[in-house]
Image 1 (cartoon, rainbow, N blue to C red):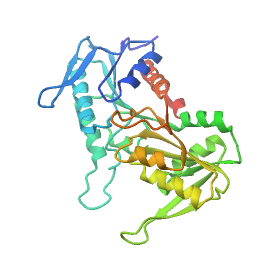
Image 2 (image 1 turned 45 degrees about the vertical axis):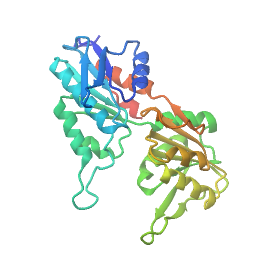
Image 3 (image 1 turned 135 degrees about the vertical axis):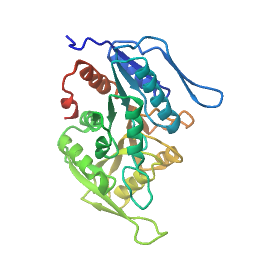
Length: 320
C-alpha cells in the first residue's frame, strides 16, 4: 500500500526514448503522453497531454548529444510538470552530461557540473536518479536527494557468465590511475586480480609513455571505464596491455558510450575484442555500426529504482 496515494507517471524527452519505453515495460505501464519538439527558431517546445496534478512524475532524459538541446528539454519538462502541480518530480538522468568539469583544474575554469545541478534544482526537480556519475562528489553539488546507481553490477553478471568467478586467467584493468577505486570494487566482486595502466607525458609535444602496474602476461584482460568519448585513451590502454604487458586478449566495458569524433573507427581498428556498453546513451544514429560494440540494458535497474522511490522504500540494496 502506497501511503502517499500518488499515481506514478513516466515521461521522456528525445535523448533516449527507447530506454524510457523499456523502463515503462518493466513497470507494466504506458509512457506518459507528451510531445517534445522545437519552434522554427530552434527553441524547445513542450506539450503535456495528460493531467499530472498530485502525481509522482519521473522524467527520463540523458544529457547526451546534442547535450545542450537535451538539457534544455529536461529543464523545460521539469518546469512544465511543476507548473502543472505534479506531486513530486524526479529527473531520471541515465547519463549526466557536463560532469567532467567538476572542479577548477586551472585558473578561470568553470565548474559546469555545479551549474547544471543548480539549473535542475531551480527548474523544480525534487530528486535526481542517475548512473555512474563521472565523479561521486557531484552528488554534493545538489541541494536535493541524488541516487547514483552503479553500472558495474550489470557488467559483473555478464562476465561471470562468460569467465566465471575467481578465474586466475582473467584480470581486470584500470585504464588510468583515476579509475582505480571503481575498478578495484569491480574486480573484488568478480574475485579477480587487478592491474593499472599508468600513463604520463614526459615532455611537451611527446607521446604518452605507458606502464602496466601488475602482471597481465598471457591473461585475458577486462578494461573498465565510466565514459568512452573519442576512445583514444581506451584504445591506447588496450594496446599497451597487449604490446607492453603481453596480455592474450582484451575486452572492454564502460557505462556511457558517448562515441564522438573518431571513436567508432578507433574501436574498429583496435585490439579490443569486444566493447560492452550500457544503453544510458543510444548508439549514434549518424555512425556506421561497429560489430565490436555490444549493449546491455539498464531498464530493469532504473525500473526497480523508480518503483522503490515511488513506494518510499530503501533502494540501498541496488548499490551493492
